[in-house]
Image 1 (tube, one colour):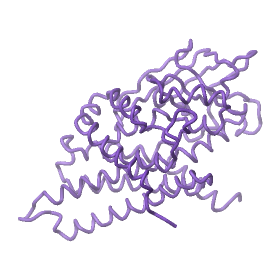
Image 2 (cartoon, rainbow, N blue to C red):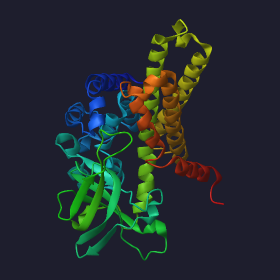
Image 3 (cartoon, one colour):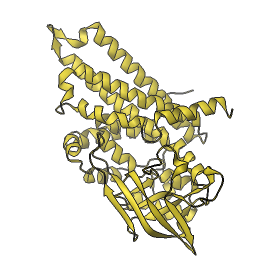
Image 4 (cartoon, helix red, strand yellow):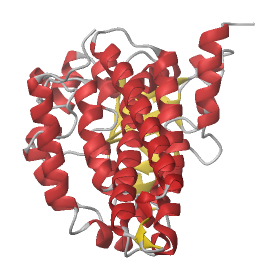
Length: 382
């Protein structure tokens, strides 16, 4: 058992850290305030191959793994969650293409993510179908050699900036098994009937694109079906086994960033004639925060490493996502407390981190859903 990073991993980690510090620091607050998309940063990250690290070389990617993906995103989120989220989501859904796409689909859709300006997304959530994905009602009806899509999705990443989306659709409403009613289709965003509207007013992650997406008789060819018809729910669950590993890395990054801010502040801030870091109550808080971050990191790295070994562990991935994101919320809260009243103003980055943290316990599987997954894996069917 070796917990040391390889030389290549250390180089990648350092490159991501330096990129984030150099590119995010001066613009993060302004992008957050203006809800602005970080166009130039996305372009530079693409040029440095810092997005979608798990995509194989034969399809235009760096050919690394989910562990490297989690590590890079951790470095991004340490500096700014909003920009980190957007850089994470440019290739969001590529895992599904790798897992279930035909060779032709992989060669067509994956290389443009790195060789051009392609941006993708995965349209899953609906107004009345969030955690209950089997209840999604956006339909895709077969007409000859085409599917006709109608319905709407909400809170979709890259809806307005994406060039193509994976869309989770109801294709077999008559099927008795709820888990066999849906399919996943690839939809170009320039097709007639596709419409996306930005959703403003997010509490955090405001530099990332989030949209409501509408499908009005959107026609796509049958070859845009991803995997088998009626297998969409099963494919989606497999996707979560992969995506949640590095989303958990988001939590580790945010928590580490908040901890770093707390350490810097308690060393410099003086009360009662000495640094507040010299008080035992503060030292205990820092110790507890650091312990939680390190524990979360170990869980995230192990779950990602198992994916790279071809041994996905649904239970551990759900545990990593649940724990790392909970730690992010706890640590950022404690960090703001240590900042005192100053932390409540956006002159201090901890305010932005505080607003960003909560969504980690909601998207990509709420904390309640993760607990259901974990308990089912432990107890089995009762």
